[in-house]
Image 1 (spheres, one colour):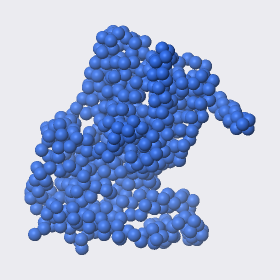
Image 2: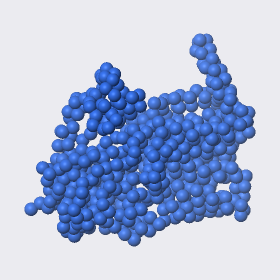
Image 3: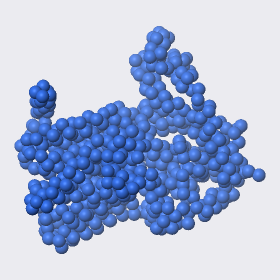
Image 4: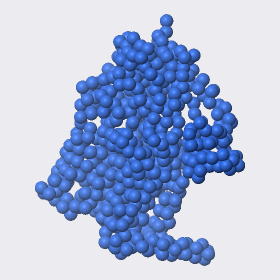
Length: 615
């Protein structure tokens, strides 16, 4: 028994020594400058963002907004083509004007600013205790080591970006907490500003509505002000949320209403009943719990089977631990209530407020979405909330040790972390060769599958070409199908279909190996190529002669990685052919040609085939 205790004590002493610099009075300020830069550099190291949603609609939506495509195309980015594109504009504008690594750094840096907000929130909640600055730093670092946050670092999915507005709204309340204990003009102004920040994030990405609702309820239940004042403050905050939503989303919802009769088209069409989509609510409900018992233990369910809430294998730890501690805390409160104790008084008002916020946000998320990456703001706060609960559940000396080891485990287990897709850097950041079209104004280019996504390639065709997605997951209604037929009839052609060409899943690693071979000069001369030949077996690549000037050789995938690609192409063509038949269209397979396209350094070739009406 003594040996493990000595080992743990030695590790704790080592950790205290190694982190002693964090107790310096200037450490928080230095970390606020340094950590976002480190996240920017990490984003560069991850490479060019290639996430599925970027290739489906994030890139297309910004392009469509800037080029007036709403009345021309029909859902090239599937049903997500009609999401608010404002959130995608910064990345699109940066990527069309700056080198890819610069864009990657800027995106990572901005996402890293969540650390600054977490640090400020932690210092408000932990108070002026001894070692509080060091503790707040460590908890903020742990928060930014969450699986969902790291998986989206530097990418376009928007959860890390809008988390800045959610946390800023919370921080504003915590910083001016004393001013909110009674109704006043200053308190009303503060609530309007806090609500405005939350509303800006919700207008950009509607999944943040759960946090807006949670903040309103937390103000009602967590403030110490009289009921009338709490209601007035929460109502004022809600007005600020609505104002912020109108600033970032109002113009788009008006566009959707005027064109489709549904401001959130095509979602929630069971409410708005646009004739151009099926009468469905939230289209993606796969990630929700299936029954009440599963809902009760949901964080434990998805920690074991992460596929229930994520398409990639995230290592989720902090949120299930937080949930377990919250359940334990509620049990302790109930027991103390039965025994006539008042242990809940040990929670500070600020801590009670933020725990209510987290609980309501989680319950709303579980009811509406169930997609784990929408929990990024809560995941960022989780280590801080875990610490608060442990301090209330354990004696002071034990709480520090339990909390320290528990958070160390939930942080370390995340590594190495998965992302939503990255590749090598290249210039230009996005590229595609499209065939010359004799009559663009008479041409329609169809897509015939939802996966792999093709929306980003729509941005390379002449502006007069009409892009229409078929069999891509859009909830088509009979009037929508009639609109497709009318478009086909109004454009005499020629018409084409664009299909993804099969590519090996080893392409991304091949690009990295090529970059390293170029960097070390192996491909520049025959001598270097000879040395590369000796390494080729370890690299799982073949050395081939290169056609580019200044390069003697390059790396290619061995035949064993390419053997199944023709079969993949045939399967995709067969599925596309069957899907197109539903619309009375036939693919001329013999006339298909393959064209190069790339996102960063990673190739995404596509096939371009003539389409004719079936007789």
